[in-house]
Amino acid sequence: MKTSKMRRLCIAAGLAALLAPPALAQTAYPSQQLKLVVPYPAGGATDTLARTIGQKLQEAWGQPAVVENRPGAGGTIGNGFVAKAPADGHTLLIAITALIQQPSLMEKLPYDPLKDFAPVTMIARSPSMLAVPLDSPAKNLKEFIAMVKASPAKYNFGSYGAGTSSHIQGALLNMQAGIDLVHVPFQGAAPLVTNLVGGQLASAFIDSASARPHLKLMRPLAVTGTQRLPGLPDVPTFAELGYHSFDPYGWFGVFLPAATPAPVVHKLSDEIDRILRLPEVTAKIEALGLQVGGGKPEEFQKVVRTDAAIYARIIKDANIRLAP
Image 1 (cartoon, rainbow, N blue to C red):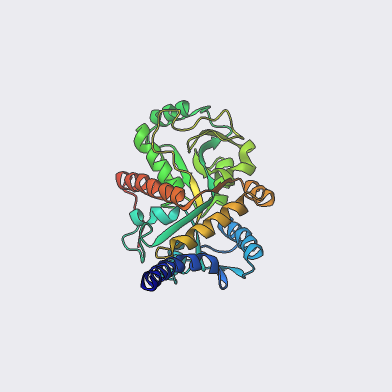
Image 2 (cartoon, helix red, strand yellow; image 1 turned 120 degrees about the vertical axis):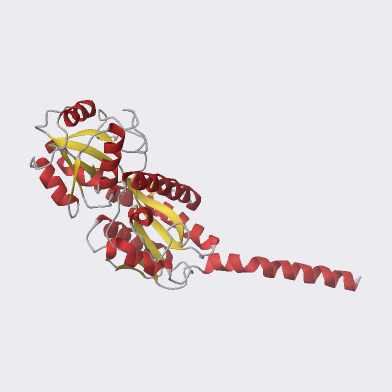
């Protein structure tokens, strides 16, 4: 009788020991300073979002949360730093869509975006639009395509950089519409918008956040994504007009090193999702011209993998490459 009781106690103790590590990992996290790595210079939208999230994490958890800008090489320096960081949940990457586009654009990367990172949650997303100057004779996308076809090699489209989403979207339109818009890359969205509204460009693919303050100075013809923009209800999506693979949104997201324990990933995801629902945070994100994200790690992982496959196909078909 005593032996049987002792055996049951030992079994119970063994089960408790097996269950303890993940439970402890979840309740003890975070146990030190949180580092939010932004692979771009301070002052941009990625940096602003990181600082907003970091401040709220610090308030909620009582641990310091610092933003560390590690710019360079199109974001690969900061991305690579987090990929090799300890997988304990204390080093976060605040990344953008470029993270999953780069493997198809560059021959060598010090990390694999789909294997070396654990998606946590999407902070925000941003559709893009094809826009023309107000004095353009094209009033809609059909007229624009006809105009370009009537004068081969005459018209161009601007992007905010070689290999960026706007470049990829322009190349995709060229392929699907059978046109030959000449690509004109700029160093960022600000000079792109300036040249479009000034009439130096025939068209441009611009993210909605950058275009928003200047919408009265340009004419949007179509938007990416799966839905029309609330502020532009009369502008159709590319899908509505018969074009495909324009569904992906630009996004800002949180990632951790791939080996981070699942309870830590989910605890961080749940907290950021709560933060994103705070009225002051929602208002700040929308003031940037972005749409609030959120959701579970599994949902964000699906977006990451789906978008990566779409971009890889477009980049290959359009033969877009970046110089090493």
